[in-house]
Image 1 (cartoon, rainbow, N blue to C red):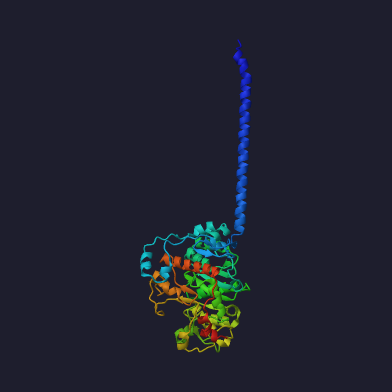
Image 2 (cartoon, rainbow, N blue to C red):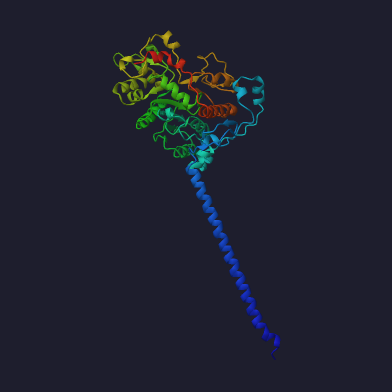
Length: 456
């Protein structure tokens, strides 16, 4: 028996199915269109990011007519602002200026400051450097020459590092300029994660490289000297730089790059390599030097011109001095000093003035301030290492900021974080101010140094 309703139900079911099918097709089409729009927006965003990142390194922006406050400074019409000075950087919870002025109240407060900046781990560096442009932006690298003079006067650095990627990178960040060259020696005993992190940082810069032959380095020894000579060989392949400066991860600049360039220009090619006559009786095992060459010893912290660097690496007489220095207690110190204080070697920029002990002890050098227990009248406000070196503390900041040297040793992040943070802040702020309001650096002290007056 057939019921009328059952006959009528078939077209209704078909109609319902058609409606559902149409609804499904419309819904799917809407989803597809929505995904397409989302993808288009994503592609546009990626394209904008790529354009921004391509321009991120040095993209000046004209300031609007009149005065416009940007950050903590006023800028005038016609100025341009590099992105690395426009980016907001994390500031300390306290101003470092009173610390540099020696304020007792500020020093007391500083002991209770919670440090906002945390140490970046080696593994985090490997992640950050997967996108180098973002890494440079994140760390606020100055990736454009700030002045024509700086651009035309490149420098070369070696950095001997072992323990702290974070402290090494903080040093590199403070001294980095695209026209300079940087050679990094990673201690053979450094953990693999440190080696990989440093190499990943170096790969982000065309002018930063690590040397393949690694040694176990002890300050002042032959291993230290060999590591630096290895860097010099690589640096000499680049034909532009004017001066070489040797550093370690525990060093930090006291001057900005613009001031360093002006100071080195005022030396007129002279080297700054400390040295005093070496008592032959103190190094009997080393034997005698080749005829006419007198033995000297020093600190091993050097500023040497390119000609001296070339001589140290390639000249047969330098090889003879190196063979002799190898048998001394501190080869790095005796090698550099002996080359610099023997005018008969005719090394351009070396010292030819009075070479008696009283005179050389008073001879002023500008490479690096090292507060050693037995050779400094400064009262260390940090702590002393086993070897007697001062690890600088907050109370040392007023003293450091007025030093004539270009760099200082010794800073340790794990000893006093605020000291390094304040030093970083000072270098960045001075670089920014020099760019905003250029002013001449007083070079009178450097122009009248004996090493300038009495150079070969």
